Length: 446
Ligand SMILES: Cc1ncc(COP(=O)(O)O)c(C=O)c1O
Image 1 (tube, rainbow, N blue to C red):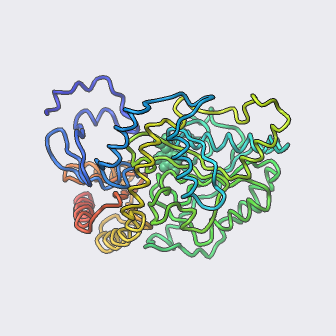
Image 2: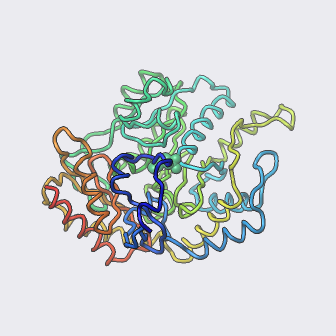
Image 3: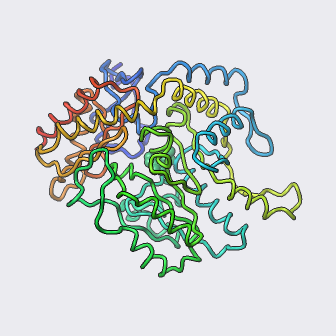
């Protein structure tokens, strides 16, 4: 297929420089295993699991078959006042995988919707308990929680604040970012040990400023994914849990990236041994094949919401929220097949094992190359940070992304980072190819 077989006038591409795309289009027409086929018949290795989604690799027959079967059985049913069998089965499976008493699954369709859903649960939960004054949120600098107004507000992405700042939620503050470029520029499958307590600021400044009794929830990504794979200091999440508990504040982990295996365990919550009150997921739950997201809440939250309505008539809705496609049967069938496949092939363990191979390769091939100022690896993801071209933020990594693409490797440019997060089925030979091409390209763009 040639470019001119496609009219490109009508699709406005998301998070993509549209004008330059049209000069040099990057169009996939097929995928299998670790590879895409491009419109002109080339193979490109999916070094990023298509944005952290495709853990089991592309074109997995058990998932495809489950979707086809579901389409022929129950294609769709509204989610309000009635439900479907697949949604209950998927919720049961996800709750069984989730840590502790995270047992109640609210389905949605994306990570952005999961973020907004979790913030709304926090407000509704506190109100149900008679603490409606708890209406403040705390996020973190450079946090990414999607593109909805709630998620953007608790997120800390400067470009969002620049363009949409006036329309963001008013009662939000932010924790400091978790990166120390001087002492912990290079992290290899470890938790950096900080001499400074990063969370003192929360206890001594942010909470006293707003009064902790007004704070509904703190939301963080356990590992800051979209910003470029930044790893929290040792003990950080445990201490955050303790501070939240001390003040009756809910803790939300956004595990849209870390959920379902990326760190070699089901969730980052398992990896770090810290249970949040809500856990947001999306992406890998269906291997990316059909959109599905959700928020897993504790029994305590659910029970409080139900209890508060004890005296209300039986037809009263306890949580005034939901999406037309909440618990879509096809998406839930895809999730069930995906989670079975992860188990059958022990893909989370494999992600942990191959993560060490990826981390070794990144550190040994890239450290010391021109402009490299940091490398961070944990689980099956690794980032290399480069010094920007002066006055042109993001340009060097974009040029390297393009160059790698043309050499058959899909890498993610994020901030001044280039990130690999391949499917869990990745082999050492794929990693050699990915890291080798990236190393050459970094040298070329010195
Ligand atoms: C941590 C996190 N939360 C939320 C989102 C938003 O997810 P979606 O693009 O599915 O809305 C993302 C997307 O990358 C993410 O990484």
